Picture 1 (cartoon, rainbow, N blue to C red):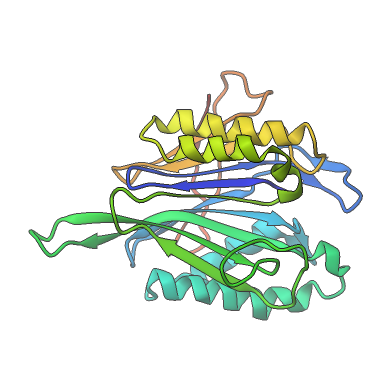
Picture 2: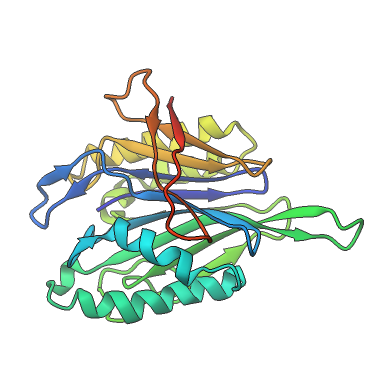
Length: 270
């Protein structure tokens, strides 16, 4: 099960996830899969990174391919971001739940994490302001967004926005059984993620925690990817794969509200 760490402040929004796909028996199927998408909605003027954890293959296609297909429709140009999050929850319930009924219940769990921000125009001078948000859509979480062990037939959605510049939010989703063995380290990680330190440093701190968990769990991979949304509205990628070296890699999963169009996106190793 993928481990995801998300951090949102007014200066940057960061999402870091491992890239390992495992089978039901814990066997590693792929240690360098992409599980993060960058989604840009020009019509509603917001952007976010999207990651998933849990079931990696739905009947007929990968979970990533399914997300790539439905994101531009569920979160379309005409729908406000918060209604769009509920649209995504409804789409998961209506389209995904029936497709996974043949899978044993304990393997049906899927959690989707969105971390990003939308732009609004302030009352004074009409200046653009960033409003960061974090959202969780899951069939193994309660209505407060807290992960639970039992997989449900229903999908719940939780979202929070940061209205004050001093606000911040961090969350960890995925293999929480392994992560909670390091509660002190997780608290330290969250403390640093909320500080005003460089994005690259935050990404490395999150990746180091995920690697620490990987030593205790075969559900978390060694290949780790991070994406940050920065102040000018740009995206910055970090690749922590041990095999990467100094070679840049391409993350071909940037979507827009215009459709499921793939755009090359350079990711720099750190």
